[in-house]
Image (cartoon, rainbow, N blue to C red; front, side, top):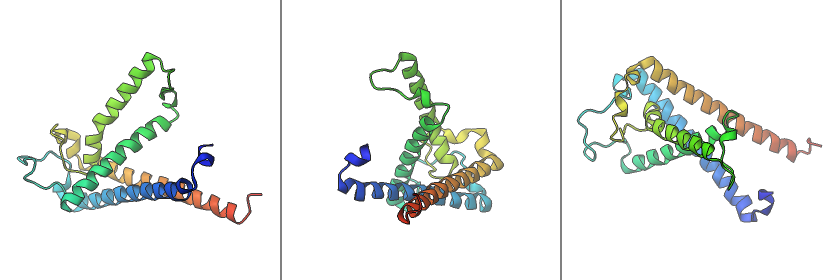
Amino acid sequence: ELRHRASPWQRNLGYPLAMLGLLALTGISVLIVCFHVLELLLDDAAMPRGIQDASLGQVSFSIFGSFGAALQVVLIFYLMVSSVVGFYSSPLFTRLLPARQDTPLTKIIGNCVSLLVLSSALPVFSRTLGITRFDLLGDFGRFNWLGNFYIVFLYNMGFAGLTTLCLVKRVSWAVQAELIRAFGEDR
Protein backbone atom coordinates (compact mmCIF):
# COMPACT_ATOMS: atom_id res chain seq x y z
CA GLU A 1 0.00 0.00 0.00
CA LEU A 2 2.86 2.38 0.76
CA ARG A 3 4.47 1.57 -2.59
CA HIS A 4 1.29 2.46 -4.48
CA ARG A 5 0.96 5.79 -2.63
CA ALA A 6 4.59 6.71 -3.31
CA SER A 7 5.28 9.31 -5.96
CA PRO A 8 6.76 8.21 -9.31
CA TRP A 9 10.02 9.97 -8.38
CA GLN A 10 10.20 7.99 -5.19
CA ARG A 11 9.36 4.68 -6.89
CA ASN A 12 11.60 5.14 -9.93
CA LEU A 13 14.52 7.04 -8.40
CA GLY A 14 14.38 6.87 -4.60
CA TYR A 15 13.97 3.12 -4.07
CA PRO A 16 16.61 2.09 -6.64
CA LEU A 17 19.11 4.61 -5.23
CA ALA A 18 18.45 3.35 -1.71
CA MET A 19 18.99 -0.23 -2.85
CA LEU A 20 22.20 0.69 -4.66
CA GLY A 21 23.40 2.51 -1.54
CA LEU A 22 22.68 -0.51 0.64
CA LEU A 23 24.41 -2.81 -1.84
CA ALA A 24 27.42 -0.50 -1.99
CA LEU A 25 27.71 -0.26 1.81
CA THR A 26 27.40 -4.02 2.17
CA GLY A 27 29.95 -4.62 -0.56
CA ILE A 28 32.41 -2.12 0.93
CA SER A 29 32.10 -3.66 4.38
CA VAL A 30 32.71 -7.16 2.96
CA LEU A 31 35.74 -5.89 1.02
CA ILE A 32 37.19 -4.26 4.13
CA VAL A 33 36.67 -7.46 6.10
CA CYS A 34 38.32 -9.51 3.32
CA PHE A 35 41.32 -7.16 3.35
CA HIS A 36 41.42 -7.50 7.14
CA VAL A 37 41.48 -11.30 6.78
CA LEU A 38 44.47 -10.97 4.43
CA GLU A 39 46.16 -8.66 6.93
CA LEU A 40 45.52 -11.20 9.68
CA LEU A 41 47.17 -13.91 7.61
CA LEU A 42 50.21 -11.78 6.73
CA ASP A 43 50.83 -9.56 9.76
CA ASP A 44 50.37 -10.10 13.49
CA ALA A 45 49.91 -6.33 13.98
CA ALA A 46 46.45 -6.57 12.37
CA MET A 47 45.04 -8.23 15.50
CA PRO A 48 42.43 -5.97 17.16
CA ARG A 49 44.39 -5.38 20.37
CA GLY A 50 44.46 -1.99 22.04
CA ILE A 51 46.69 0.74 20.65
CA GLN A 52 49.33 1.74 23.16
CA ASP A 53 50.39 5.38 23.44
CA ALA A 54 48.38 6.57 20.44
CA SER A 55 46.89 9.93 21.31
CA LEU A 56 43.79 11.09 19.55
CA GLY A 57 44.69 13.37 16.65
CA GLN A 58 48.34 12.34 16.47
CA VAL A 59 47.83 9.02 14.67
CA SER A 60 45.60 8.55 11.65
CA PHE A 61 43.19 5.67 12.13
CA SER A 62 42.62 5.31 8.39
CA ILE A 63 44.92 4.75 5.45
CA PHE A 64 42.83 7.12 3.32
CA GLY A 65 42.89 10.05 5.76
CA SER A 66 39.73 12.09 6.23
CA PHE A 67 37.82 10.23 3.50
CA GLY A 68 38.65 6.90 5.13
CA ALA A 69 37.61 8.18 8.55
CA ALA A 70 34.29 9.39 7.13
CA LEU A 71 33.80 6.04 5.41
CA GLN A 72 34.47 4.26 8.70
CA VAL A 73 31.84 6.38 10.43
CA VAL A 74 29.29 5.66 7.68
CA LEU A 75 30.05 1.92 7.80
CA ILE A 76 29.78 1.80 11.59
CA PHE A 77 26.44 3.61 11.41
CA TYR A 78 25.31 1.17 8.69
CA LEU A 79 26.36 -1.81 10.82
CA MET A 80 24.49 -0.34 13.78
CA VAL A 81 21.27 0.13 11.81
CA SER A 82 21.52 -3.25 10.10
CA SER A 83 22.13 -5.04 13.41
CA VAL A 84 19.07 -3.38 14.96
CA VAL A 85 16.94 -4.24 11.91
CA GLY A 86 18.28 -7.79 11.95
CA PHE A 87 17.63 -8.10 15.68
CA TYR A 88 14.01 -7.03 15.39
CA SER A 89 13.52 -9.17 12.25
CA SER A 90 14.62 -12.39 13.92
CA PRO A 91 11.69 -14.68 14.85
CA LEU A 92 12.77 -14.80 18.48
CA PHE A 93 12.52 -11.02 19.02
CA THR A 94 9.67 -9.90 16.76
CA ARG A 95 7.35 -9.85 19.78
CA LEU A 96 9.65 -7.30 21.43
CA LEU A 97 8.99 -4.74 18.69
CA PRO A 98 7.16 -1.77 20.25
CA ALA A 99 3.67 -0.83 19.07
CA ARG A 100 2.59 2.79 18.82
CA GLN A 101 0.76 3.91 21.99
CA ASP A 102 0.32 0.30 23.08
CA THR A 103 3.64 -0.80 24.57
CA PRO A 104 3.75 -2.07 28.15
CA LEU A 105 6.55 -0.94 30.46
CA THR A 106 8.20 -4.38 30.53
CA LYS A 107 8.49 -4.32 26.72
CA ILE A 108 9.98 -0.80 26.85
CA ILE A 109 12.55 -1.97 29.41
CA GLY A 110 13.33 -5.01 27.24
CA ASN A 111 13.87 -2.75 24.22
CA CYS A 112 16.14 -0.45 26.22
CA VAL A 113 18.22 -3.40 27.45
CA SER A 114 18.42 -4.88 23.94
CA LEU A 115 19.51 -1.59 22.37
CA LEU A 116 22.04 -1.03 25.17
CA VAL A 117 23.58 -4.47 24.58
CA LEU A 118 23.68 -3.91 20.81
CA SER A 119 25.28 -0.47 21.16
CA SER A 120 27.82 -1.75 23.68
CA ALA A 121 28.84 -4.57 21.35
CA LEU A 122 29.21 -2.28 18.32
CA PRO A 123 32.75 -0.97 19.09
CA VAL A 124 34.08 -4.48 19.67
CA PHE A 125 32.22 -5.73 16.59
CA SER A 126 33.63 -3.04 14.29
CA ARG A 127 37.10 -3.41 15.76
CA THR A 128 37.12 -7.21 15.42
CA LEU A 129 36.03 -6.94 11.77
CA GLY A 130 38.85 -4.50 11.06
CA ILE A 131 36.53 -1.69 10.02
CA THR A 132 38.16 0.66 12.50
CA ARG A 133 41.13 0.67 14.83
CA PHE A 134 39.68 3.42 16.99
CA ASP A 135 39.28 2.38 20.63
CA LEU A 136 36.45 4.83 21.44
CA LEU A 137 38.40 5.66 24.62
CA GLY A 138 36.94 2.60 26.31
CA ASP A 139 39.84 0.11 26.12
CA PHE A 140 37.72 -2.31 24.11
CA GLY A 141 40.92 -3.74 22.65
CA ARG A 142 42.03 -5.16 25.98
CA PHE A 143 39.74 -8.21 25.89
CA ASN A 144 41.84 -11.37 26.04
CA TRP A 145 39.95 -13.12 23.26
CA LEU A 146 40.82 -10.28 20.82
CA GLY A 147 44.39 -11.61 20.91
CA ASN A 148 43.33 -15.11 19.83
CA PHE A 149 44.03 -15.42 16.11
CA TYR A 150 41.60 -18.28 15.49
CA ILE A 151 38.61 -16.55 17.08
CA VAL A 152 39.22 -13.28 15.23
CA PHE A 153 39.94 -15.07 11.94
CA LEU A 154 36.82 -17.27 12.13
CA TYR A 155 34.70 -14.27 13.18
CA ASN A 156 35.88 -12.31 10.14
CA MET A 157 35.46 -15.27 7.77
CA GLY A 158 31.98 -15.96 9.14
CA PHE A 159 30.92 -12.35 8.67
CA ALA A 160 32.32 -12.15 5.13
CA GLY A 161 30.86 -15.50 4.10
CA LEU A 162 27.41 -15.06 5.59
CA THR A 163 27.07 -11.46 4.40
CA THR A 164 28.10 -12.43 0.88
CA LEU A 165 25.71 -15.38 0.91
CA CYS A 166 22.84 -13.16 2.08
CA LEU A 167 23.69 -10.51 -0.50
CA VAL A 168 23.86 -12.99 -3.37
CA LYS A 169 20.67 -14.68 -2.23
CA ARG A 170 18.70 -11.42 -1.98
CA VAL A 171 19.97 -9.94 -5.23
CA SER A 172 19.68 -13.13 -7.26
CA TRP A 173 16.17 -13.86 -6.01
CA ALA A 174 15.04 -10.32 -6.76
CA VAL A 175 16.56 -10.41 -10.24
CA GLN A 176 15.09 -13.87 -10.89
CA ALA A 177 11.62 -12.72 -9.78
CA GLU A 178 11.81 -9.62 -12.01
CA LEU A 179 12.93 -11.69 -15.01
CA ILE A 180 10.08 -14.15 -14.49
CA ARG A 181 7.62 -11.27 -14.19
CA ALA A 182 9.08 -9.50 -17.26
CA PHE A 183 8.82 -12.57 -19.47
CA GLY A 184 5.29 -13.30 -18.30
CA GLU A 185 6.14 -16.71 -16.84
CA ASP A 186 4.38 -15.89 -13.56
CA ARG A 187 0.92 -16.53 -15.04
